[in-house]
Length: 433
Image 1 (cartoon, rainbow, N blue to C red):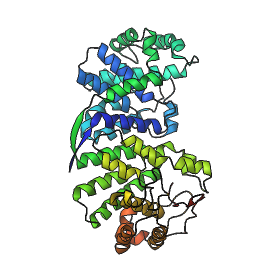
Image 2 (image 1 turned 135 degrees about the vertical axis):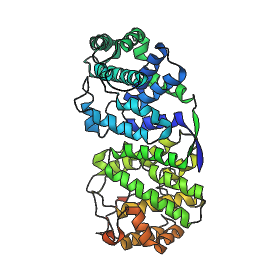
Image 3 (image 1 turned 30 degrees about the vertical axis):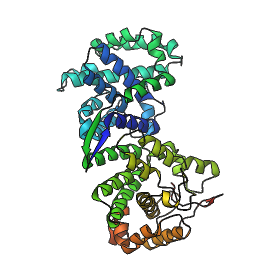
């Protein structure tokens, strides 16, 4: 299967995911990207080179492993072990061919100039990486300055960057940065409301690319691995849901292209959980109304992240509707009955099956038989599709193995039943987290 996607829109969506992933200084990557783009223009780089700088800025922190690491990187010049997230970012981008050329820039984006110039790397890579480091530190220094207003902080920040030229940063990069930042407009353009306009305009510069299924799957795994930085349980859940969804699509006789898309939708369905605080995802007891309200936002957040990417329309809807129910009491769109396609119903069943089979902080896993009993109970409540659940029943061992990724003989065991959360609309599916 080949699919046409807008690569620029995809990169912006990845940037949105990074904003959600625990970065405590919102829009950091976007500000870095815009500053890098302006610097590239002043340096006389061509359109392709400037665009690559912009995209590298958006994605430079894609290897961030946790909010705590992010906090340490907010020190004015980073910290001594900041190379780890650079290596992870390089590995992530290197696995997706259309963005692999950005991997070396991300790898070295915390490299001091006096070290980079001695390394055996191409000059354009070293220059681009050092420029990303320069504007990355500009953003951090501005935020760390006691004068939170960038107009008040700019002189101290510019002075600090000049003092670091030739050691941390190339003088050939510092000089043009100082030229373009010597006015109020530069700093005001980095405020969120002005930044959004620039980002919107850049999104219109479409970069459509046709990619094969393997590349699409690698792209989906990039998203999932960023989510994994927040909660390891989420990645295992997404992988299991994806495997089971593809299997059920095959059992239902859907075309191979649809099976491919179903696997990707399973991988991406919980992207929106990045907006849910960890203390809620990992809470050992019941959720209160406010906590459940936050949980119920996540499928719409998935929709919002993915809906900006042309070419993924079907995948976006299937992924976003995994908590819709036949009786119309699901979320976020309150779809019901015939409004729910077979693909949506398959993703919903796969999501519930895998979640019940997976041990969570608030309950143990269920056995395969117990999971099937729960699924049938939800069919009786008009929450899940009976025909899809019957497919599970006919191949229960295979479904268990795919959902859990475990050795069936060793792991075909269970635990106590879950304790569902009660809501005013009736019993919720006990698998939202």
